[in-house]
Length: 499
Ligand code: NOJ
Image (cartoon, rainbow, N blue to C red; front, side, top):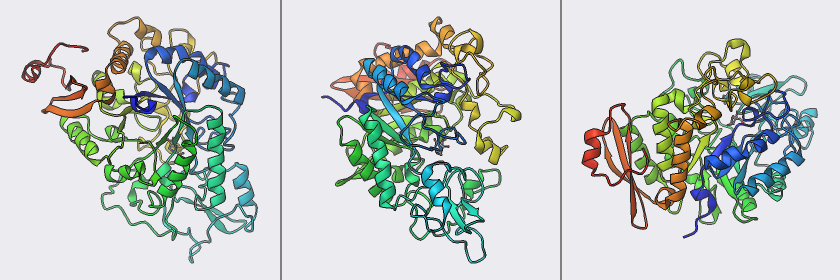
């Protein structure tokens, strides 16, 4: 049975600033990625998702887009992009782009026009509340009110993220048309799909009602969590907008649409769409990032997720990304390998974060070097994302082979020993484990598309089966340092394939 490629693929996320610098400016770029394609191809992944490289003032490191149809000079040129797509395809890999349709940069020409006058046709701002304050109580994810006042025109504009990231109004058909055209631009250039940034934010409550307080909020939590976001995100009409994106994706064969969705399973399920209104192929499932890393919690999580999936929906799993603490720091280096085995043996498309295959951990960033605007706006709560965005360590040459210049974020201090070249030479390294596990996944249809079944769980172990066409594999995960011992004996295992 042939499956769409994105069902059997392993997706590898590249944060382009930190993967490989080719021109010595300390920031990674597209040519750098191209130079490292052999590494990715031999690692055994199938698709590369690259975080944004559009022209941008980089206030949110590229998630503030100033032009949807070009490449920022920091990352290269459109010609570099074309060369990269060709090279990726020549290696038999796929290329997924990040697309950021919820908001632009505040220097995008559309916003500059909108800002120019109250009468501008591109403007859709709000008058102050009767007391002169913001139109409602909505909060920015990155701290403070989500409304920015413009004293000159005496109106507010809305920004779910930074004030340098004004939201677009997707209720406006001209906005939708323009964004869909931008998607076509890249599809025509050969991209194999998109990861849509904060897709669940696109639609807002048409009445812009106040959001209620979150009864579970406690001091010390991120301020954004003090409200329940029942009107600013995850609105029913978002699915109309997504169906329009999906129609564009379906204009060409074999493309994939992935949505960034931090949502509980019952809400997540809706993003697959329904008959007559298809949604995304893969609404990102981030629950492995937020669930305690214990066998029982994970067993429950898997069962709940499987149960929540609508008929025909294909699952997916993520254990790390550029917004969350790295897996090796969350669960410890010893269990990071276990987490890799889990990710690559669950039912569904795995998305892997660059560097996790080396066991990279978060890097503590001295206050003077903090780059992330979230940490700057809301300091001290551990929200900053610089720690998980540090440069990929390639070898023992200066700056770990990442750059000839000064890296934009410091390297992990363990880089002289934890780097690709060193791990390549060590048969027991995390890297070689990942290579073996990826090769096994590729060789075993049971791992790629087989059924999933819980076999056994206790406080320290989790075992499940994957089965396809009569071949049944047992994945037995030991969350403690002791040997599998009695647990394994009870399972009555067959021959060992990979340990
Ligand atoms: C989600 C992205 O993953 C994050 O990095 C970004 O800051 C926000 N969306 C805003 O675009």
